[in-house]
Amino acid sequence: MADQRRIIHVDMDAFFAAIEMRDFPQYRGKPLIVGGSPTGRGVVSTCSYEARKFGIHSAMPSFLAYKLCPRAIFVPGRYEVYSEVGRQIREIFLEFTPIVEAVSIDEAYLDVSEQATDFPAAVNLAREIKTKIGQRCQLTGSAGISYNKFLAKIASDLNKPDGLTLITPEMALPLLENLEIEKFHGIGKATAEKMHSLGIRTGRDLKRMELNVLMKHFGTTGKYYYEIVRGIDRRRVTISRVRRSLGKERTFSRDIYNLEEMIRVLISLVADVSEELKTSNIKGKTITLKIKYNDFTQHTRSFTRQIYVSDAGILTDTVVRLLEINYIRNRGVRLLGISVSNLNTEQQPDKTEQQLLDFFTSYEPEE
Ligand code: TTP
Ligand code: MG
Image (tube, rainbow, N blue to C red; front, side, top):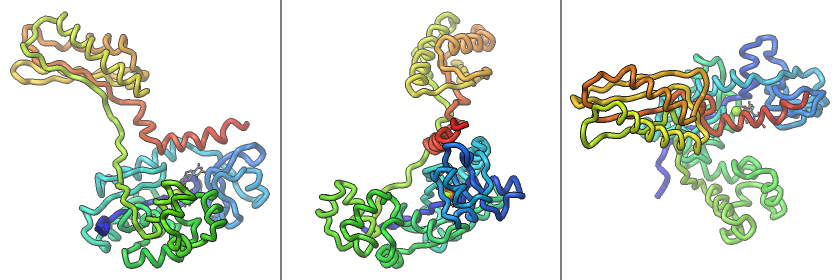
């Protein structure tokens, strides 16, 4: 059955460099490079479109970038700021659909099939998203609209910067036939070279290859190539979830009145939570105790620590103190729960932030 979805892919333009130009007007209109210093061993993180005219691009050694354009301005990155803007744009996306998959700091897929029943409506949504990004962040992004992720991604790249591009089912096949193989997302440099050696330079060449031949040369990815050149990509937009809290609670078969018994329960709940925090490599600052009385009234009380914790001893001390202060004596308790929130994962919500950190650590140690 034909793919009936409406997917938007948004990718910010020259993301780090655009933020620097926004915050420092003296950089505007100039070849600007965010990354390692030209005298060190670092690399270019990204650069302005003005710098790209000189052949400069991401991951190029900074000294080479300097050779290509000695008058380029080099600035080190401001991780915190980029990360915050990344969060702001993700929030904007979530105002349009809950189905948002962040794939990197400045890029996401949105499934708007529910919100937009046809392509013109999806294009309007994409335009609204771009407008909001402009208003709230003073930045531009490029949006691609199509019926699957692969084509939406290709579309967002077609008219960068500040692009808004629709690929309808009618447009898809001819467009893919004429596309150079390097432009296919998922075909990297090495694969492209291998394809060249097989005489494949455009989508049209790729489409001539039989499935078994592609699979012989490229394994199961060969099937992916076979399908994408026909405009087929069934991958779902998977929601990137940020875990906000982690907790456990227990309802008792009979009401409890005894503080010591409650403390024993809390210790066992804390043990579970602490273990889960440690195996997930998560810590949190806010510890919350929940008490539900036998008349079903419920109280939650929290304490926020200065540092992130996951240690069972510290968590126990905190919840026991919360219990001792807040338990209303002589009332029957039917449920106790504890949770830990304000997690350190909120600063690094997902792989996109890790990726950003990796970029930074790859060029920072040089000096
Ligand atoms: P990209 O979206 O690949 O690049 P970009 O936004 O700078 O430019 P474009 O207009 O072509 O989309 O990456 C987003 C950000 O991620 C980029 O601004 C900087 C960072 N990044 C690195 O630090 N190192 C890299 O090698 C790449 C590719 C990106
Ligand atoms: Mg980008």
